Amino acid sequence: MKKTTVLQVCVAFVLCSPQVMTGSPVDCPDQDTAGTSCSISMEKLLERAVQHAELIYRVSEESKLLFDEMLISNGMNLHIPEGNMCAPKTVPVPLSKSEIQQISDKWILHSLLILAQFWIDPLAEVQASLENYENAPSALLTRSKWMSTKLMSLEQGITVLIRQILGEGSLTLEGLEETSDRFVSSNILETVRRDYSVIYCFRKDAHKMQTFLKLLKCRQIDKENCSLF
Image (cartoon, rainbow, N blue to C red; front, top):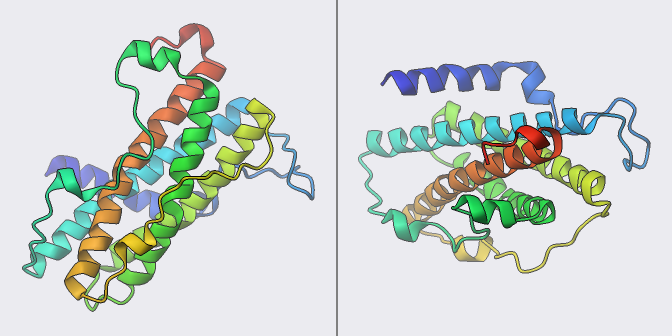
């Protein structure tokens, strides 16, 4: 109970702070008109990206809890086996220290971009769907909109990191699974099941993005003291 209360206070601050609501990992006052250069330091850019990912993950945790409470208050039990709920793993997570040491910065950056781009449309669809619920909590609506907007900002930040670290331009990633067709349904219960699945599964991938960005920051900035990974 105490843990939930602390999380709610933290997320409430995140959602109500104008600076956090309008901030972006790529806010650059000296950015050129084409958006191809940025005077912000690599360290600051990585710090902002990590903070962004941490906030997104926290809000996704809160959104899942709010959705659970909404289902309980309406006497709904979706009976969804957790192991079968999520889409096939888009990006595998290195588990051992040796696996982590073997992955490249390029792999990390491309994996981050895949994850961000994979969830942009599903989150936008959930946001639109929740607005049609008769009794969706306003807190859940606010958070779903926030996650959708902030994930697009994070995707822009990842693109800048790819350009800065790898010297690559815009990437067009192929092979991303389309989630829209998989989730389309006119049945109310299936719609609720779809929306819950998106929030539940996005929460897991949001944690991946947070972890990958922390690892990248550790490698780029704290090279000699990167013992955590």
